[in-house]
Amino acid sequence: MQFTSSGRVAIIGGGSWATAVAKIVMHHEEKINWYIRRDDRIEEFIRLGHNPAYLTALHFDVSRINFSSDLNKVVSESDTLIFVTPSPYLKGHLKKLKVSIREKMIAIAIKGLVPEDNITISQYFQQAFNVPSDNVATIGGPSHAEEVAMDRLCYLTVGCTNLNNAQTVADLLTNKYVKTSISTDIEGIEYSSVLKNVYAIAAGICHGLKYGDNFHAVLVANAVQEMSRFLETVEKNEEREVIKTAYLGDLLVTMYSNFSRNRTFGTMIGKGYSVKTAQLEMEMIAEGYYGTYCMKEINKRYHVNMPILDAVYNILYERISPSVEVKILSDSFR
Image (cartoon, rainbow, N blue to C red; front, top):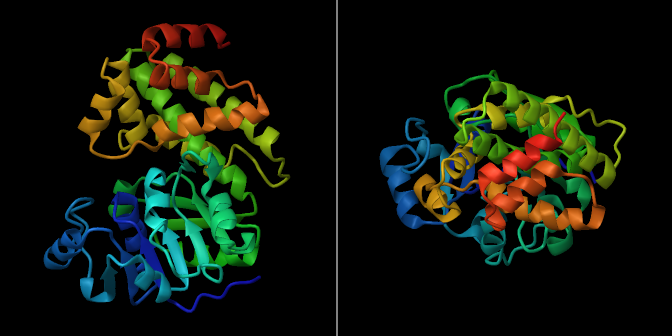
């Protein structure tokens, strides 16, 4: 089914990436609907003209935003729903949903999986809410919210089984500092966006252990190979080229950038922080922590050789010493 946006667009989520996506969309939309869970945050946002908790230097014309903490109201009044909540909280938000979203265009700007279910976000919307696959799109690519806030050039890829619908979503995101492309490889983009977070944690752990740039380069090279093996095993797609920005580009920026939450989280683990202490000090979600467990469970079905995933899992969930685990991992590299 081809979807035509009527201009009623909603942002679902109140974090840094949600704030950046709202900024992008408002280049095209005169008004947007915006679901933020907490009324006190909404009140502060309206009073200050910026998100009080994230990207505080980024100011909005709040007269163009219909804020609400009522998810059903926002969904009812919107045709395109852009979900930008941390993956661990998605099901909790959607438990409140009483309105059908089957006829909506669902755009996923979440780089994670559904914990416990161990499925992609697009699969969850299709299975739990009967949204047709043609009406579900995923947004991938190297895209730190902090750089979007500064108008730095960003490249996004919109994946959807229906390319016309992918283009509809891409058009919402395209502006002078956001370039877009479209793809049918929705599963490949989703899985790669999860795996790059896992590999960024690995990069951070190695950084915290004071491994150098030479080893980091070898880690990146092996991560690309590991990602490619998994994607080819799960679903072959003739269009997919892992060297493109939605895959390799997102992997590189997340493994190298100081803006990367997952790399920061990994660095803390490498320096000796416990998982719980690192999470508390960060005060933000490192999606890769949850993604590591989900991917480990998913790979029990596919049995792909994934030594980096296994190493990160052992460190985070089996409490194996980072120095011991990375030494074993390094011996497997060539």
